[in-house]
Length: 220
Image (tube, rainbow, N blue to C red):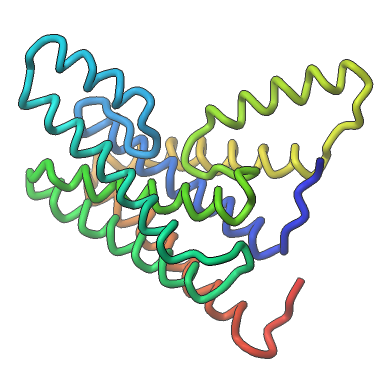
């Protein structure tokens, strides 16, 4: 199955994957090697903390997990259908503000900033998943590698190569990986203020989508 989406979605997906790559790398580099863009490892760490009776760490990790869910909840509450609309513009603007708050809090030594970063990622992943019917995930790569392996198996059985889907996967992988590399370079100089970069990128996505949705804009 291919992915038939407007060009603006291709551009936005690449930019959002880049932003998520930056945010997640910042989490690993500066926040106790924790991911912000997906919760698999965080849940495992929280389970270990509970078993070790490290209640302070367990509560902190639980707060990050809950924040990710709250971000996803916000998308579910506001999005009514999969067609691009002003709701996506508003949610992207909210995500940008969440990353700004995360940068300010974490740079000031406030661990609560991790919750804002996780909420932003939860919001983004819910948006892209809802829009694409779970075909596009822009904040982590587990689904990508699962789908890629599945696709390879099907191709070996004689199924046609889904070229557009492959192209979308490659775009997400490239964006996420490049974001991580940029974060690795920037974090040593800017610290948690590196999170202002994904905030700016998501803000640009919000403005670009708003322009695209204006009456008379070219729909391609």
